[in-house]
Amino acid sequence: MTGKSKTKQRIFTIFFMFTVSAFFIGILSFVYLFTKSTVVRNESLFLKKSVLYTAQIEVIDSPVEIERVYKEKVEEIKDADGNIQYYSVVADDGATVAVFQSSGQGLWGVIKGHVGLKSDLETIAGIDFTVQTETPGLGARITEQWFKEQFRGKKGELKRVPEGTKSGNEDEFDAITGATVTSKAVESMINKTVKNAPAVAGKGVEQ
Amino acid sequence: MNGTETLGVFAIFFAAAITNNILLTMYLGMCSFLAVSRQVKTAIGLGTAVVFVMTFTSAINWLIYEYLLIPFELEYLTYIVFIIVIAAFVQLVEMIIERVSETLYNALGIFLPLITVNCAILGAALFMIIRKYTLLSAISFSAGSGAGWMLAIIIMAGIRQKMGTSKVPKGLEGAGITLIIAGIMSMAFMGFTGMMNLN
Amino acid sequence: MTSKAGKITLANLGRENPVFAQILGICSTLAVTNVLENTAVMCAGLIFTTALSNTTVSILRKWIPSRIRMMVSTLIIAFYVILVDIVLKAYLPDISRQLGAYIGLIITNCIIMGRAEAFALNNKPGLSFVDGLTSGLGYGYVLLIIAFFRELLGSGTIWGFTVLGDWWVKWSIMVMAPGAFFMLAVFIWIVKGLILVDPEVKK
View 1 (cartoon, rainbow over the protein chains, first blue to last red):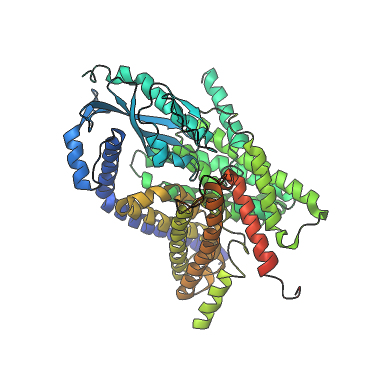
View 2: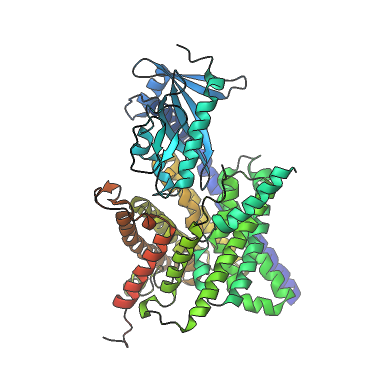
């Protein structure tokens, strides 16, 4: 008798696990699919906002406005496969800014962002970060205004200096104390972009 | 597999175990670390179990992610699938140990099921996905993380055992002093940062 | 009924506090508390998840086969966390981006699993809800206190607003791993040594 009820127990256990899993995963899938379009739209809006910020374009933070200004001022330059190579943006002062996608390896994971270069492909118009999972309070501070804003106007390949130096030199930027790996990653991201910029956008950005 | 990749795999193992120690730098796996680090013997036992579970479940989860979740665009289910795989694996290991060695089973006791909620295991699995490791690198990474965790808990147990006769202020007994030791250990391990340049 | 709920509340907030008495949920306590705002978001997430998962586990408790109860609890906990994540991504994307890194920490948070095992499996849904809620609150206030000090000493700010000017040399160690360990140790020391003094060891 024990043999039979044990098998019954085992079958019930497996059946229970499957049913419960299917039930909860089912609800999750439903909610996921239901919100998918909203999530995609949020993401796209976020990226557009980032491109505009990188090119130092002032825009009111509303979906309608962002879409309008983006449509008006940004041209997506794509390659043969349809992937965006860079963005050609008409900045507020009329000049063209080339905004490149950039990525690097941070402490916890990949850091992604945008680096905007003026038409000489050396002067930095601005930078922004779109994806980062660095340590909050340390590496994650790269998303703070003061950190990003300091890059506007810097030129060429950059070097890190200690935080607080507020260096006036156009090839130095303040790193973040306690976030060496993250700061290094940002440095290499920017320098890589500056180095590769002529190859990617050289043909298009001549005024 | 060329020369640089082999070196890379070792570097990942070393980085995971020492310079980016999953427990002292990334704070994962703390609960069992604080609770079980009283004796070196138990620490070794638990540590070995963690290394074993971490390495195998990460490998299984990598395969599931690569060949099931990505092709079917089910990435949003990553957390839930990973943790269930870990829970099922631990359950399986528990059943096998119970049948194979009664003594080991009794020695590990409650700690075996506790491995399921060891955030280090899920954490390692998620890291390998975020960092887009190949299967080999992922295995090296998880084994390294497990080894690092085991190293930390053995060191802690050793220190605590030695401290058995020291006078600890009453309020700090147990968890308090363990945390302070952990803090000092973590500072020591910070000295290793920058040894591995992953860029 | 009310006094039982009251007793549970007091215990979870005080003598049986998940963080300083039971020593649970330490991973997130250390990771999250260097920025006050993130701590608040994390605590909200945890309170929500613990309360609901406790209730759900309690509702299903009579059917869960004992062999797989950990797997089922894990499934339920992960379910709620991911649900929150999906909903946030769609309707509160900025908060979702903040919480993103911590999602994994909530799923493996020993407090949620601990309460499910210790309480929800043996108690009615109503009480389980209270237990989950108050455990979360007990965790929450401890973390907020620690975060307050860590952010203040380590960055000179409270909730992102600069409070201590440039004259303050930031205790960067407070923002990093060791600072978390020390801060928590001090907290436990103060609570255990001064507040929760053993009735027999009266001064």
